[in-house]
Length: 243
Image (cartoon, rainbow, N blue to C red; front, top):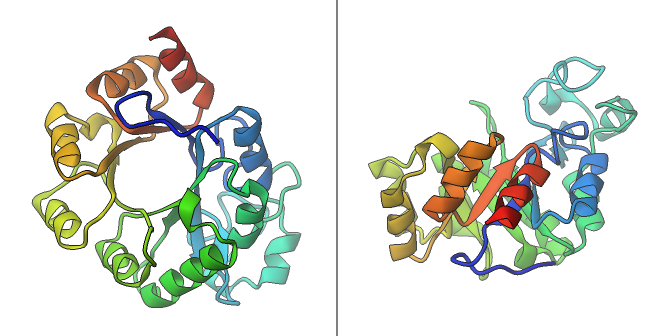
């Protein structure tokens, strides 16, 4: 795995397991990111009916698979039998970590729908990461402040946590300072020189998501983003190679 320093060259991170080239949140998507020599892969997790973290973005199966119904009510067995694209099942986080096996960074975005048991999700994710001995090569991200705080309270030493947002608000900066977060992950359009400077002042990474247009990638790189998340990693790599 390539280890870049933040000021040297931004990390190239495949969004939703290389969504531009493979079905999102699948092992095929992770293999694609590995084949493309990405620095990391981003994936979404929720708890299924068996309280096991599985890779899926929505709280419902209908957009990304040939099944329907709520993920929270779907068993592991049923998820192994659905088609999430190109014959791919809905994998578990354990499956994903075993496949990555420290060959690149794994960014785990914890997806939360109102009513979800945040503590149970955090516990399950942290348990899977601990059992895979993956704390050194994973990041934990969430848009949900309660989830970010819960992770910061529970995660072991050496963990890396970032708060996802469109653009960091005073509340998010406050949480980042209070809980010693390791990064902010903001939308590409929300990245400013000021945000990058504030992140650096607090020894935090400044990630941007989901940046697909070369001109936008160029802007984020020029502003000093620590890592760029995109559906088409080769476009980010091309901008970096050109520089």
